[in-house]
Length: 165
Image (cartoon, rainbow, N blue to C red; front, side, top):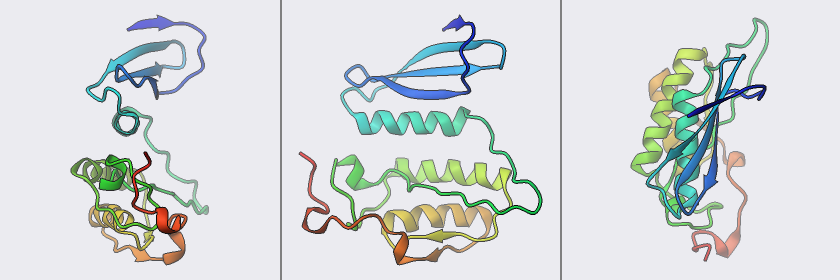
């Protein structure tokens, strides 16, 4: 890890090299910024490397800020990693279950949400991957998710569920 001056950056994680499985990270204490590389086992797997970046951000990113009194905030959350994503499939309305990793992602996020916000309502699309994510979050924060079909992903017709290759 090395220190750099005058880089305006908060905690950030991004892919640097997919073939080698390297993630580039920045950490700033508002006076100095450190840049470093994280070597992962996700070589030649962009999806796994993106998931590693999300996990790092959830674990080490800035804490959420609570909303100001009298305001309403809407928090949009993408589902955790699912089997179709891991198999590099076209999503759309295809039904994919969360992987163990996706369930862990949802649990980490649920804990952060519980510790940072007073959530009054939870909504989810009717797709399995979204419902599973919402159920994990809902269990942690004490709410049941209301399913809304209109929150589903774009419909890709016959291409749904097919591999991207």
